[in-house]
Image (cartoon, rainbow, N blue to C red; front, side):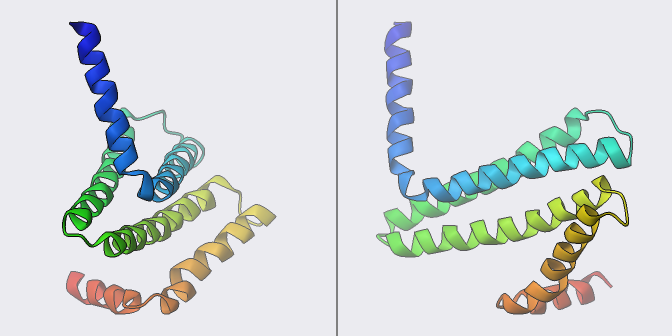
Length: 155
């Protein structure tokens, strides 16, 4: 009986992986970004704040990643059900790029805490953070409008 359940679960997992194969590269890029964010955040906490490993922070990082994975998978599934395969792929790609951008800013901000000021790595990371935070935003459609909107909304 247990063997049948194992085979059933393996079959379901294989079918799910086959269904999600077209967005596999997007999901892999999200995994890379989230793992990098996790480790750089952990290093920044250890070096800058002298913190030990915090299970609550780790769980929050994993929960945030899970939300984006589920969102991408759900959008892809709904797009396929609506016979809009290309639109679903494009939507998942846009979400992935937005996640990469936002988490890259967080990674660079944490790396600034890891490196000592007036060192080459710090200056490189600081410059990249500046370019992504203030200059790159001008090239993303609607992003500067959104940032201005949220700035006025919070006031």
